[in-house]
Length: 297
Image (spheres, rainbow, N blue to C red):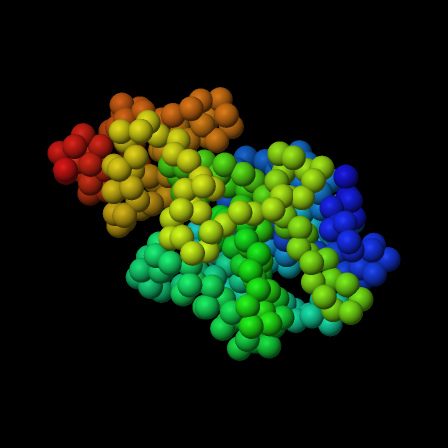
């Protein structure tokens, strides 16, 4: 299936002057071992692919480029190579339309943490203002892991959704990408695609009047047993001296859940892995064991 088959019904193919594939938050191979089988078919026929950050290893872009040329930015949760080689944002022009591509995270970690949760309003206004400052008609962003289309004040916002989970302890319920079509009069049209059902367009149902957390909860689910969820949230809020060493210990527990081979990671499994993790710094290990054993409650 090529991108043309997902054109909106009222949009004549002969009037389309640009077809753009939009993808984000692949986090490969850390949280997503391989592209969904349908991805290449969905993107076949696009003129270019825009990646809105949290790429993972740079070879991800090489593989996407077998489908079409790729332009990418870095996210906030990148490999060192991607963080070093990819820009924070890109401004490009497609079929006469100026497009701002960025992940949309804050460079300052404190500001980033403060921005999470709350209402959609400030988040959307920030996107629109960023686009207007650049003179862009379209802003493409990632980071939220929530597929979205929103237009305000002459700026079209597009989030394609994600392929991978937003953190180590959740699963992305729906792996989505987006297709951006630009008509010969400059009008943009967007179709999202759920890669599990690639033969039809997916219409995101996001209540922008509700808290951001409502949409986030609809897009992801925990991969740890229910009683462990509050404690993994506490683990995620901690500051660690060597996060890479911690991930090396935890990821082998997560991948079977992401692959659908297992439903949950248990408290006993996670605690045992941390206790046995020889590479975890002693202070980091102490924080984690205190939380997982309830000694830090």
